[in-house]
Image (cartoon, rainbow, N blue to C red; front, top):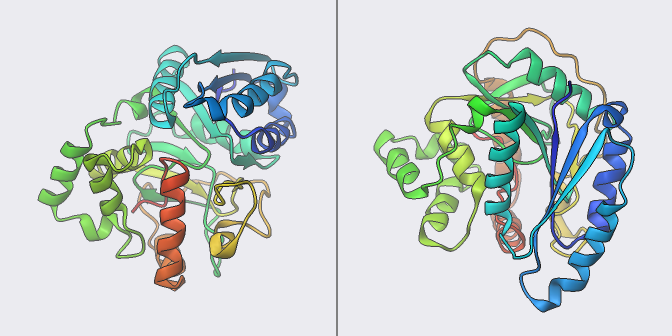
Length: 305
């Protein structure tokens, strides 16, 4: 049986429609069970858009089954994902996770399910990821990076048990271990600052805690050399703008070959990602980061290590 898909939606019907279209373009969709977690409106102004999203997912076809979980109150993205992933991994042992702005390519489900099977019993591997940076150099067909990720991903029950909800504990361990610079991709991205903000209540990011927990345990996430998802949500309003396009792919979604590779972090891929992030003008990189923090409670990518 294929892994269940957990799709987390809120109030972006146009984005959600693109994600669903992408999923249905996967041959495995009709054999997959889809669970849609629809969060409740945070305030009356969001009600119409929340209702539009729910009307869209209630009429879904093209999957083995569709279960829609409609919240009567606003849980927020962090609580929605943490509870939803915990529930599905407990029930099915594994899960594939998407949000309403992460559009999968036609081979996304094939890659995810095959990788879940291949690495199910490899304890060093905590998760599978669908996104990979559009770097200016070639990448291996697949590769590992230290930590976890959040743009189209999958894990097992054993992997999700690593998640630590207490950001303060993670921050203390990070400080004690002297790993902050490595955690920040050698200065490429301020992950430590984002964890500090989570602890201080300035964001409610589940993803920074997921990444930090896996990173501190020395665990690995598998990435594809050819990205299997496109993130269309780096705008905050539904239209792309400015240098946020640096995270989009002009060419993406070719089939992924799962080859036998060393179970260790790929220095070549890590170097390519660090180079890309550092090549962004600091003010623009900071602006993109700030926009994403305001828009959601997620980090912009997951190359964590």
